[in-house]
Amino acid sequence: MESELSKLTKDEIVTLQVLHTKKESNRSIARQLHVTEGTVRYHLRRQATSASDGRKKQTQLEKLGLVKVVEHWWQTQLDLLPSGRSPNIQQLWQLLVEDHQYDGSYKSVAKYVRGKFAKPKLRPFRRIETPPGAQTQSDWLEEKVKLDGVVTKVYGFVMTLSHSRVTAVIWSLSMNQLAWHHVHNEAFKRLGGVAAINRIDNLKTGVAHGSGPWGKINESYRAYARTMGFHVDPHEVRQPQQKGKAERRVSATRQRLDLKRNFTSLADLQAHTDQRLDRDVKTRKCPVTGKSVFETWQDEAKLLRPLPPTLPEPFDLIRTCAVHKDSTIRFEGRTYTVPFRYAYGSVEVRGCSGFLQIVDRKDGQIVKQYPRKTEQLLFVDSACYEGQPTLRLTAPRPLGKMARKLEEIAAMPVQQRSIDIYAQVAEVAR
Image 1 (spheres, rainbow, N blue to C red):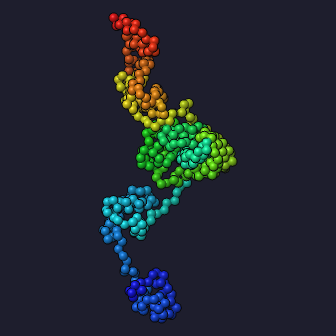
Image 2 (tube, one colour):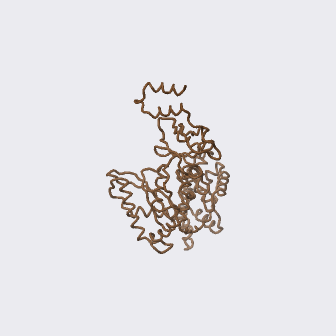
């Protein structure tokens, strides 16, 4: 019992030292703290010699011999991460649990690491103002609104011109690949053109894997960007300040739009948003120019890349397909003909909603369009075999009499065909 009473807390040790400086006797201090005089003399002696606490307990990591594992992992992560970034302790804890049978808590690992390793140096951020026409920043926001009386989750795509701060917000019921391309089209329309660079988050519709400069751009989005004429620039993971203007507009959009009211449809919500934003740009000032955002945007719009005459249809799948010697390609288990000038080469095929587009890989022009995911497995357009020869290819042989007659028969409705057709075909064959 006495040994239990002899253990003093940190606060009690401070009290002991204060009482000693006030000339209290050891017996008086011991009586007030409910300990023995020996305990008082022990702590006073330790204070006089500045001794450290030799009763420090071993951590579970030390007992299990995992200290070297932790140190090696931590240093490896520091070498891989950008300067100023601290390794993820959650990942370290999961490694210890899964690979080294560590049964301690996450908090125990975090406490050990924070006491063992110094925090990385802080790095100030460099503020950069982009010139007119150079950059847009894009992000999503998520809201629940009433559409025709029904509470519905909707997604708002926010695209901001970094120089003038003009913002377009496009609402969608989905964030899939088709929606991703559609909202880009609508945003570019409202901004009046395309900036040279679009900085995005690391979502799968934009980045297939990785992040930042090391990320691999989603193939569908890469093709879309090539058609529209902009460069995709993902920011680094967990670095939202690299897309600060878009982040700021997401927050401001929630404040400035009246989303509590009932909307008859998604189109009604979009019309309300466009009206509010059109009014907002005329009252908000651009910090770079000191003029209104609208006036600054009017100057910037002249430097944007003009929109193509026909905006690309949203697509969720893209493939480069070889063109066979019979001027056909294979896509999603079906066969399609393409103009013969592409034979022995390749074309780009985009899977859109309900149809597919065959695109020239050099100039991005749409050369053919067919229905998509039909029961029919073979699509042959005889017009693909017509035309002038090229420097690389001669024109296919023209149709003979038999083939022309069969084409005429195929074009006739079934109910109009008679038994005489067979006699006509036989006559041609003689």
